[in-house]
Length: 160
Image 1 (spheres, rainbow, N blue to C red):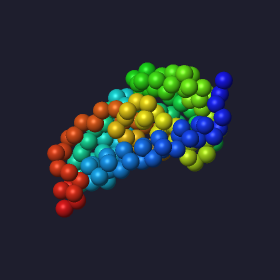
Image 2: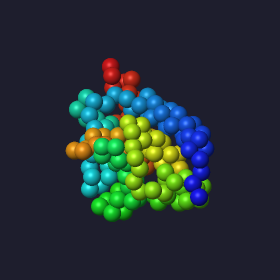
Image 3: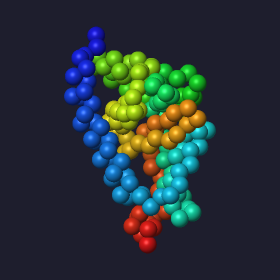
Image 4: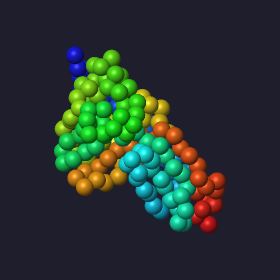
């Protein structure tokens, strides 16, 4: 049985703010970046600044948007298991709490849906942040899993 839309909105709202705060903290620490690279074979996002890699982030794909559709990675048979690492926890949480938006592989989406669903995944997985990058037909949303520091300087030192 699905819970009411207002109940889901009450659940979602603070998680969006939590996710924004996590991304702001991440940006404050590693903000001197001017490039990103995605390695889809290893599920690694690398941020670089001033021509050198700053951080390497092992990620889980949360989901993708294409047009007005959202697809959870746990429901995407075209993705290898390593790409959707631990995303079944979101599905299980949705089943346990009656949140249909977390148990339906596809959702109608607007410009906010990807970030909202990613905020939920970031919370459930206790991820340190998230990222979105463009694809040929939409966007791919990531949850950070493990952050590997490649350059010890802080973002303020890199900007000097």
